[in-house]
Image 1 (spheres, helix red, strand yellow):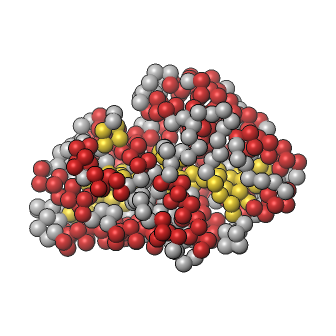
Image 2 (cartoon, rainbow, N blue to C red):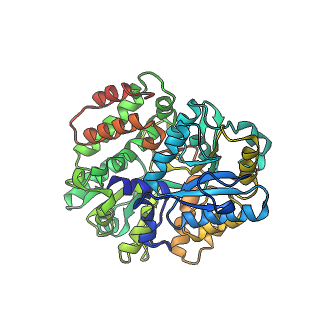
Image 3 (cartoon, rainbow, N blue to C red):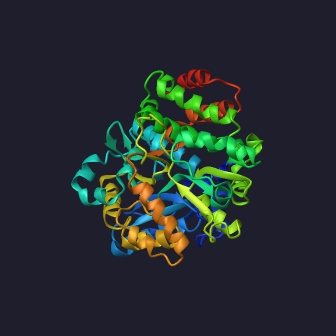
Length: 453
């Protein structure tokens, strides 16, 4: 079941913003690839064509297909052949292909730890020089999106598609009934907890059984207390990076919230894929929720007039008193990423680069992402988002744009930034931390053992 919620995080389906629920979850249900593109395509691509593998599931699939089709129409002699996979099949297929040195020309991915493994194996092209020659392209993209595309100071992928930050939501009706104001600091959050508990309202909803939902709290606390470099040291493989003073402080503050009954009773048995955590917020059983921007659409479609009636409040995570972090920072999905296989021929690589520079993220594609209820990873679209006919949606999309574009650092979700082995150990220890079965130091000790794995 966790694969469904992970898919929702990765592919940013905003159900309720014009995206049907069935289509939103389509990418999780099967494993058979389909082929389209130049010459009908066969997965390996037609003669004289570059190849591109990506994911099924609407509306993303249709937008990707349209972008390739427009490129092929404009470049009939140097086309791109595509192969489409559903989520789980793609992850296995791309891993096998890259390991065998037979990756497609264009490699779709999430950046972070997966990209770093490709770089370490010499399987992707360093695009730093290319971006240097195409400053106009780099300058169009949110600067914060390049973090997950960068390994050891070099850029190995082009950020593309859409952005989805993690957001602190609150129920305005609940706050108004208490005469409370939304928190402006971590201290405010801790002060609000006993007030809501006294009224029988859970301060925070949390689908803790899913584990990655708990992780979002640590991601923000690490950033707000010690700044972006705290987790960056982990990502860079620095020895004992999890034992940094800011790390221990963040872990301690998190357990302080758990011990104060900051989360709904029984949170460790609630799953995010059921959307039960969202229901607690929009029914007024919980006052606040820290969750991904992708939940906006499902709350709009399932929560009655909660969204349409103006009862949903949202904000970036507040600063921690005395913390070193930049309060404009955010975490979540800073974009999706396209790399070029170093094993592709020179001609194929040139086709791929032409695709990146002429058609990917052009005006047509950008408008399609906006029409699907998403925020493209591109500067200058704020006015288009604000012009969306539904004013509630327009305000929301503008907020997501501002949060993403103004972020001093847009950190990738930790379980995507880290290699798979370390990510699984991380999720396991986060669950134990929230269950109070390990101490902050034990958490750090356990995580230090898997740095770089």
